[in-house]
Length: 144
Image 1 (cartoon, rainbow, N blue to C red):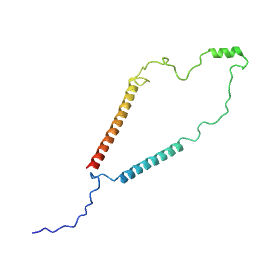
Image 2 (tube, rainbow, N blue to C red):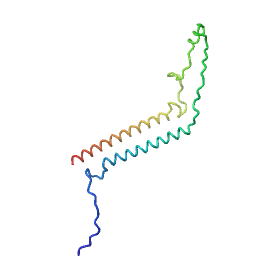
Image 3 (cartoon, rainbow, N blue to C red):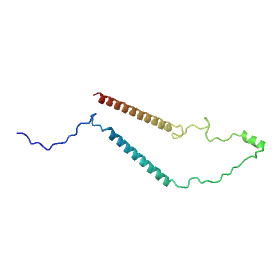
Image 4 (tube, rainbow, N blue to C red):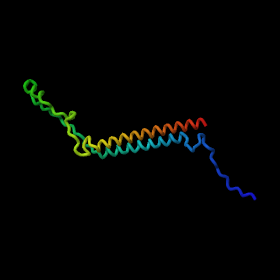
């Protein structure tokens, strides 16, 4: 005895390319929406930071210049030129060796630098691998 047929089911035709991939327009649209949301949040955060940063800032004041020597005092000018001026940036070898792990050049700082380099290399490797897989899939889809 034949079984009664149920309600007809609607089946979507398979997409070209197969594999359940979304069309390129949907992917583009989702990337554009994500980018717009990101930049929108960025603009809001910059505005909030501008509001709460305070409006004072550096006030403009008139600068007064003090001159140690008169322009015609040759002895004073020669003495000033002979004295070594302090440098803001220390010269190589003027500093001191790191005394604790957190000091400049200590093992913690070097470990953080190495960790950043490893993370960057991992990101690049994953992007390259993903690109190769996508190209291989595209070539397999177009060839099949």
